[in-house]
Length: 211
Image (cartoon, rainbow, N blue to C red; front, side, top):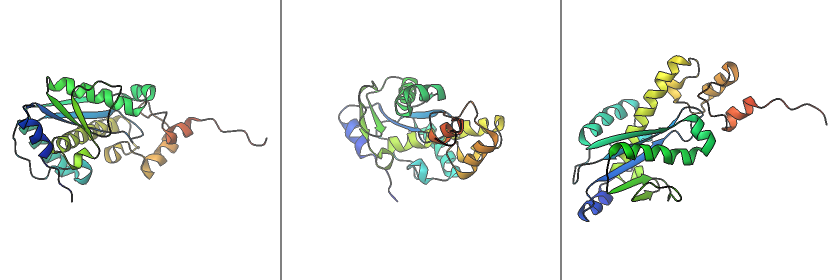
């Protein structure tokens, strides 16, 4: 199993950039709900919390425990979200940048951000470095990955109480077989992303038969 390290962060700290923030988002592929980003400002020269890695590799219990430890270790944690209307208006990638921007704003001043993903152009996220699969290599990004996943999953569980039957408390809004079956039987909610193909197809009128 690949474990992230503090190599990148230590390089930045040693150069005098002491307020280094890890940023990651979750929910790009979900059929419903917001995109949520977390920004985690670590103390300079901190030690790694054992077990922190890409949130997808962790169980729910592991994520919950690590989220608490990360929050205790961090100088600040910022959470930002982009709504379903923003996702549909802007596209989900641009909406994720807005969520990141909002998360960083809640952290306060920072010297450098380490952001999971490809290079970001035409969008101001301040001084930053984008790292593909950053949650596998950067401890700060992995911390943000865990926090973002926990916060979004908790939101989807609360939303599941208002909209029972879709299994959001288990699937977090992703397109599982049970979620797709519920979409067909229960219909589309205001929280579903209508621009996403499985939802859009349900909303499209049936084509007339014949020529």
